[in-house]
Length: 290
Ligand code: GDP
Image (cartoon, rainbow, N blue to C red; front, top):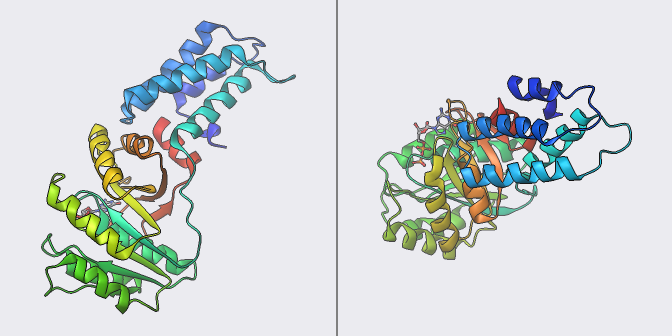
């Protein structure tokens, strides 16, 4: 369990509860303070951290530990449950025919993620295809094409066409044989009205089963506005956090998860097509606290 992997200072604090059969407010305060420190450092929004702290405090003091449970194990279980509640479960992704649309700002890692996800689905025995509708960023077509070649998955794009909606429509026809279609969309430096119009049109055309918001792990509190905008325009079913191989721990993305009432689907941890993993709460919690 993740709890074996807790940050060393938190483990130390918890270990100081060993041998105690009851815990008092001071003990709980100490544990909560350690957790707060780690989560804030990992960019988790302060209001989320406060809500989590309150739940832990309340439960640790009010719930009766089951018979035979030490104070340490009681607090540990509550901390773990509340952290799982904070980060959520993994976005459900049935291994069946589906269309997935990616949204996000330019540079967040959408194109890379599209190819990575296609690779992931191909390893699960499905036939994926990437449809590249980003006509805005120079080089997006070539980048997607090359990555799909490396991933050995089907790819559709049209470097001579500048209407992304048309590419999306033709892409659907051209990838009829695929089981999983992953539609990459354009991002801009900031959220602009024409970007929103464009993604709404693409969404109406491809009618995705799922729309995932791609976020750079370093997003910090900027995640909130973005998430709200994309949620309002196309609806967000899940989040992909990229660049977790860097120093950022991705806690800012939890704001987006909270804002869109969604979950995390994938984590990206490098620039090659294999650098993708399914989100699972334990590993992510360890990373946040570590
Ligand atoms: P897009 O504009 O959203 O399509 O973003 P790209 O897919 O082009 O990614 C922007 C940059 O981030 C590129 O240089 C990618 O190689 C890099 N990138 C994407 N995902 C990751 C990741 O998980 N780790 C690292 N280190 N780099 C990444």
